[in-house]
Length: 388
Image (cartoon, rainbow, N blue to C red):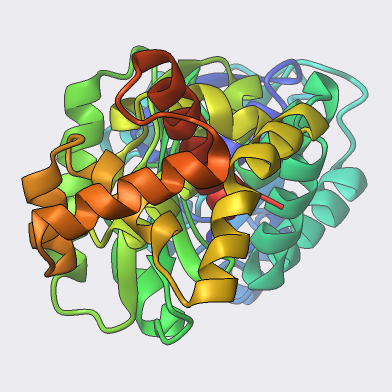
């Protein structure tokens, strides 16, 4: 997961102003360099071709151009030629930046940013960018940040902090896609190609032996999410280890990041449970209401009260009452379809449903009782897939 110019600009939006080269915001930053004396006459030939490299965020006070502002254009052309990421200018000498330099930067998509805050110190930027680049290179970084974000999901300030660390360039509307894996997914060879399918305002990372994709835009449409899903499915078509894919709904605000991630994870786990390749959270029906509260004491108590008699009966008699109830509900409450799914006779299913009635005291043919059986089953499913 690279650290980009967009990430830097979003982290320092109150301290820098874009002058040119917005088309280069997706450029990755590998390190920081300082350009202040390399173009001074007499030193130019000695230093110019040794101090700057591709992927550098270059800082400058224009010291070298104090007596000749036209050297600024030479500097921009040189930085473009070596593939620098961006030029950050602290214009302490209040020099006029030549239009030719800005036009060239725009044409070649080299971001040129002017420092607008006197408290913007180069040494702090060098340290900060170095730490961020190092963090994002470590595969465990995203895992730790998302773990913390989900654990603190009820604290909006904490969620915003973790979200900004994951991607300072997130836009205002978010959705997530989670690729659930059996642990055999080779993420080293899978993540690279997937990162190429998203923009600087998105995120692709490994998480819990799977892969998480967060898409952001303002506005973000359901169609955009579906297009991203289609591209993802195409790229994963021949990848081993993928169990299922879950898709969240679109939510507004960066503080919704924990919500969209959880929705995608839950949808993926439901997809695996039902043997489906892909499930969207919006298609989960009442589970959307139950999942956020599935582990609450009230939910646990109700589910246990209804379902434990079935589990006890199954254990004592080596029966299949709980499985039969689940299949009956998932088959549209049709005896014939349930029998087909269980490879048995409809009369057998009818007999088991009567046993369920005897064990629970709930008559499957009475709507009010069937509602309780259905709700208890759904809570059990929600508890099984709910985030820890």
